[in-house]
Length: 288
Image 1 (cartoon, rainbow, N blue to C red):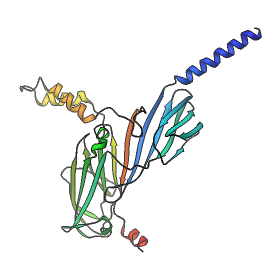
Image 2 (image 1 turned 30 degrees about the vertical axis):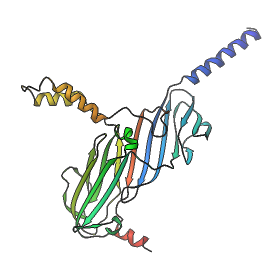
Image 3 (image 1 turned 120 degrees about the vertical axis):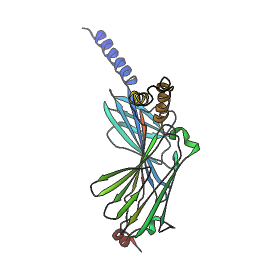
Image 4 (image 1 turned 180 degrees about the horizontal axis):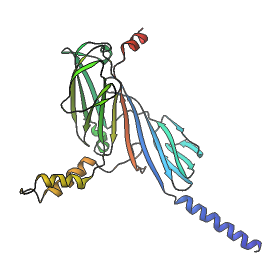
């Protein structure tokens, strides 16, 4: 093989590598982490942008961030003009972006009453009596497109040694060790109001967990259950189409990026923690 042939072979290999780099498949998932105060107002928001590629590839991702931080090794990582650029290896790579804007697709409002009198969460540490809690969820119309694509699961965790006589009509009630959990579900695009009451002794409560995810369902199973329940009725023939439409609504619209409409995402979810009620000893320790 002469030098001229070697040169053309090397040149061919170079262009093939560029072609593979340019057309490598890249998937992106976004997880939005949110800290909410005791009343439900967002305090801090950051996004974990997670990528998966079957080959080494160059990536350009968009978002308006206060700061960005790579969470793994990637070549030529940079952030300029609201664009994050890097060359990621085959496999996975992620980076964190801190958002200045704390606006969310939902507005949350958590309120309490103790013995029939409205109180703040800060006044409930170590409380005794009849407690009522109400959480209101309202769609932020400016970000409705996100709310219509995701379902909310809201979980209150109550210390079984501090609460008795729990009443929560719309909740899924479960035992978890020494705790009692109350879970509420808000379907895509819906406003909601949920309440529970209990008798409390030396009260405290862990942070409230709120997850927003696209709900996956076995549509065929639900259609079959509905058909069986309506067998022999005039609606039997229409149930399949009706249930299919309902399942589609419950699973939400197609997902879009929360950080920039030009980004393509495979999955979007929110992980939100609404501050609970401090334990009495913690409240005493942090008191001025």
